[in-house]
Amino acid sequence: MKTIRLIGIPYDEHSSYQRGSAWAPPVIREALYNPSSNMWSETGMDVGAPGFIFDAGDVPVADGVEAIAQIEAAMLAQVRHADPVLALGGDHAITYPLVRAAAQQNPDLTILHIDAHPDIYDEFEGDRFSHACPFARIMEEGLVKRLIQVGIRTMNGHCREQAKRFGVEVIEMKDFDEKKLPVVNSPVYLSLDMDGLDPAFAPGVSHREPGGLNVRQVINLIRHIDLPLVAADIVEFNPRRDVQDLTAMLCAKFVKEITAQMVYTNREKK
Ligand SMILES: [Mn+2]
Image (cartoon, rainbow, N blue to C red):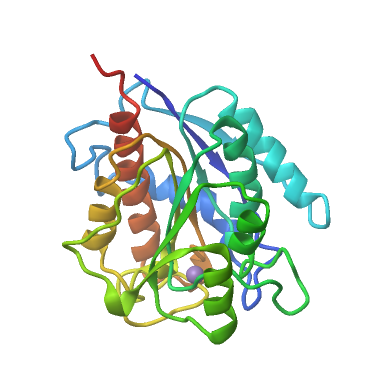
């Protein structure tokens, strides 16, 4: 059985509106081990049992130009073990270096990206590494085979052009159909932006965008991945905006469900 490597990336320097997601990793860990719940995934796996999760701790990231390279190096050190890696952000800017590293181990990745926002601006407020830009950098470099975005509800003209230019498969929230979930045909990187959920379920985000996914729909999207889920991130949880730990507990639930899906989809088949 594969052990899932958990790393925290406490980094939010490229947030455009509000900082605070750098505080998330220790808050998510605390929620994960909160005695109000248990460590069982809904699939019937006790992901708290020995051998399921190896916690590699938080990556020290300095502010400034070296940060992106530091995050990539830290992720590379994890993916080299050939075990699935789950990264806790941090803002969405971390996904670019995380995918750069994951792609070195897995050249044909499909990214399943759950978000209110396409995060595909060429640049945002003069910042090409903004949390609004990671998927432009990923697609420019041809790091992945496919990018599938789900839950999007903030498309503007520029981002629509960018999506077309890069051949992104965008499932806007207005068109989301639970009976037609995206089908993948290569190993998967899951990028879960907590603002993809409706703010009623996940208020602890910087950019609250009404009209989003519910918790069950996101779990079903995770459960629908039937090829190896090799890496994932949970980003944009901002503890400063949370209400009564609702979003912290939700992140913890996703850690459990993603871990279980990683174990299941990377199992050795007889
Ligand atoms: Mn977002």
